[in-house]
Image 1 (cartoon, rainbow, N blue to C red):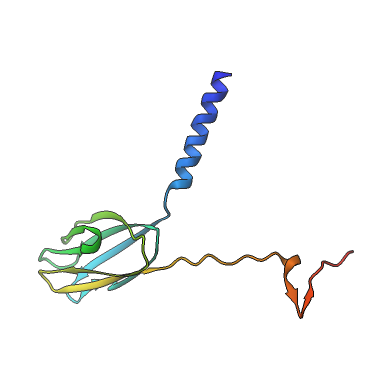
Image 2: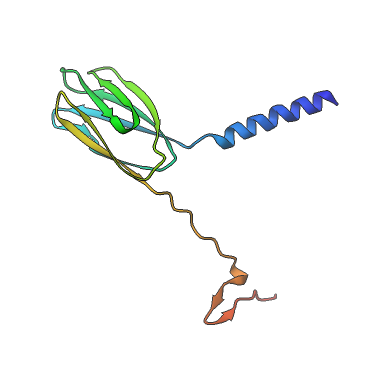
Length: 133
């Protein structure tokens, strides 16, 4: 009996952990002579974003998302990474003060579609009912 209880508790904790994790979106950002590539990123609110940052130029650069306390070095041939969660919809800027590069993260509000039950949906003032075969 104890073995079943322990097994159930382990399974329950694994399922609860998996359900509570946020969706992960991985984003690569490259610093070039022209600036950041891409210059604008779109993500959904509540997602965990994992940034991978590198550079194609010899001079050291960076990527700072000040509003979320992210600082990533961008050096040629090396990749740095950080994770952050954007909980609110809006636009958040990122930049590098040494190169004057800038960009933005556009956080979109996640829309939950309204679900309707077909048998309760009215068409032309009449209640829909399924055909009997």
